Amino acid sequence: MKKKNVVFICTDEWPGQLFGHRGRKDIMTPTIDFLADNGVMMENAYSECPVCIPARRSLMTGLTPEHHGDRVYSDTMKMPSHQTLAGAFSDAGYQTVAVGKMHVYPQRDRIGFDDVILLEEGRSEFGVTDDYEIWLGENGKPGEQFMHGMGNNTYYTRPWHLDEKAHETSWVTREAMRQIARRDPVRPMFLYVSYTYPHPPLVPLQVFLDKYRDTRLEKPLADDWKEEWIIKQFRDIAAPYSENEREDAIRAFFAQCTHIDYSIRLIIGALREHGLLDDTIIVFMSDHGDMLFDHDMVAKRLFYESSASVPLIFSGRPMLEYRGKGYEKKLCQICDVMPTLLDLCGIECADEMDGIPIFSEQKRDYIFGEIGDDVKATRMIRDEKYKLVYYPAGNVSQLFDMENDRKEEHDLAQDPAYADVLHRLQDLLIGNLHGGDSAWVRNGRLEGYPPAEGKKIPNFGLLNQRGIHWPPVETGYSH
Image (cartoon, rainbow, N blue to C red; front, side, top):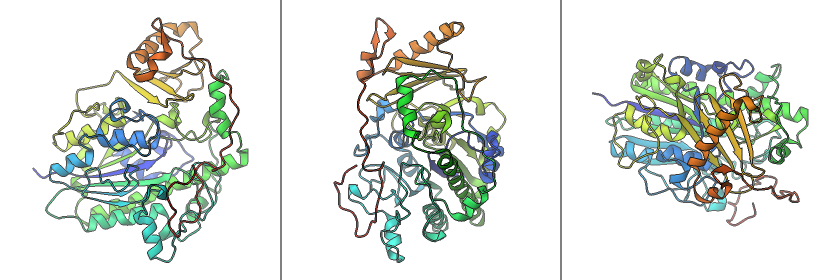
């Protein structure tokens, strides 16, 4: 039987609900909507650690943070000695190529891919000039990637400052199509296409920003939550942005999403023209989402839907047999993607994984999420009906009814009618805690610890602001 090809499209920081096919009328995602409508779109997919590096380690190993070693964002941690997603496909005879963001250390570690065409958002502090920056230099724009002046973790915005061909999304798309054209014709292909957007900086092409000029945006989500100390810490991050700046940020974010959506059309076109479309599984996902001012918060590292719920779509002609069979409702998480793809392609993995194949009889009763070891540490339990979000600082539990309140407007943790549900999920959470987390439990109950009131320290690096990258920046600068 002919082996299936896989084209895996991964974005950075795209919320799971932010698509036309999920009911959002203010964002334009026609290509991804088509893939969802004609494939299997997972409605309950989560990032078990919603920040870039840990999420991608789960994707590439099929392991949870407990077993791959990072629930923080450890940018100099090497990959564990475990067979990777790419390595398993390579061992099965596939030609494996990655284009775009990898976020591994060392940066040129191919983690099992035959080749990597690298775009690492200018992280030259680790001693590497990536292939995109080399291309800029070869095309008369050395070091100009960040001359738009927008920060990589801020929500101010302006249009892209170079020509369309030089935009990172356009560059990744063009390089991906080139790999399709120059593939090995006697081997099946596993192509990983990893976009750096819609993650800030918010610097969309003007042509896509113009599409949202007259769009009436939905208002960010609100709630009736108690203003706990820890909630205020997260809301303080979004506090500096005015209402106008918030709206500008959302339009720019949407424009970056639509640029990716339109770019996927080109990748599909390349597959069609090279005779690969009928035998190719197309996967679309993101490593995590972005609060994008929902609940007066911004960015990731949170277990609310806008940050932790991720898009996960399996499409293409080989997936037609799985449509309409109830898989869409299953609870799943990022570590499930590797065993799912290996199972769909009939490939064995040399090492055991925490993930389970989505298109099988196996199922998850709940998902355990974890992020951080500091004062903002957060843990989650999400079962088929409810979600518990737990902050040890202040011993704060929040409880949400995910069937009737997917927008998380109402915290039920203090409602006596839900006491049994709260205690059941807290017991599940306690059973999954590991490492130093056990200090949060006394006499079998969560007690956490009192938050330490501290003076706010300004970030003089402007949340990873970058400058000119020519000549290449030396290692060891301040964060």
